[in-house]
Length: 151
Image (cartoon, rainbow, N blue to C red; front, side, top):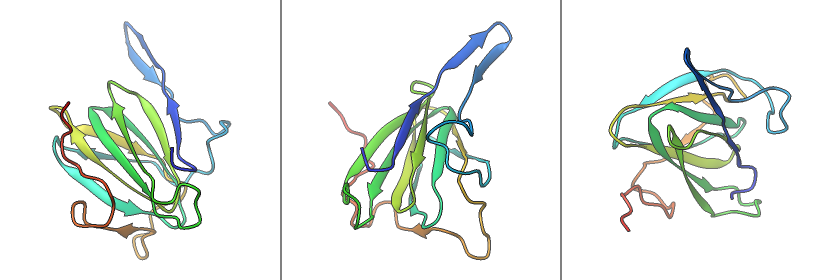
């Protein structure tokens, strides 16, 4: 696993009224700081990638649907520099993933319906000076392909 990435398995608690899934608490070891909370969606087959942050960590959870989440460690001083991780998150694998600053990340909507993703970054979004660097999802130097892997 890329240094600083943290994955927490989430527990879904269902009953006759619905379900509950606790995502993150401020008293957990993985928690660093609250910046904001937002929701984004991704349609099946759509790739939203690549970007990294310089000053914030992201805490990603998929609350509906499924995504293929990929990360690339671009931190030259990291013990895992150049490493790629791929995780599947969502209905079939409810997890929280902390993505540290300096790690490129993105995802592809998989399955047959829209994925709903919650992110709780450690910094609020600055519309005048966004804390991010973006890269084309397909034309880049990251050793990762978004294609469906058969077999």
